[in-house]
Image (cartoon, rainbow, N blue to C red; front, side, top):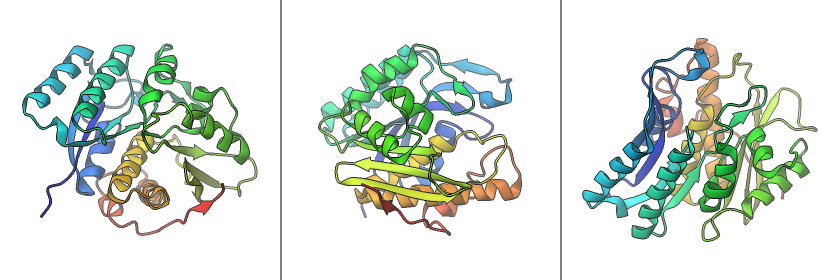
Length: 293
């Protein structure tokens, strides 16, 4: 029997609820991966509640934890690095330092970056320097990028209100990504002109083409936190298993839809990550990808 593959996930952590590592780690474990989680913050709950307790962990802490893993002589067994919300420029530097160490030992390891910066309606919710840091320092190292529509426009300064615009924006961002990797852009929460009413889409653009998966739009108000973190993890996990963009897209979107539908049915403020656990293995309702380029 082969040992499970390993993912180093450097993200925020909340004790109550599911965002950051608290949204990404369990689905990946359920899919059969070992996850080496490093937390960038330790909060009581996500900041969407308006109040929380806890602290942002300094970049030196992240560097020290990585160094401890290096000392175990296992970092070369890391198959992918996953990153999400970056609280400061120092956090980004620590993530890139960890990635550099991983790639030195395993050049085939993938870096999946969820460029968490903001979303439609809420606008920017990170420190003002973060978009430039992601654009200039992090993006050129990414193999897989999972921006939402707002973040895609922020990174490219290009609109994505129509399908041709979204495809062009994804191509712009792909050209700036890690040249040796698959350079896959997965655009989540895509609401575009011309799409059927009450639907939401996810677009994946890669070297071999572009695909769109459309699902009904579930009326979750307020929008639930942690959905972007979870779908990035689901896509990365499936891609590591299959190296197929369409399969990974269909799997991630289907599992995510079923998770959100359950959350809606149970009428909870937090996504029902644990209750929906079987969806990460075999989604109960599946949505097919349509090739659009």
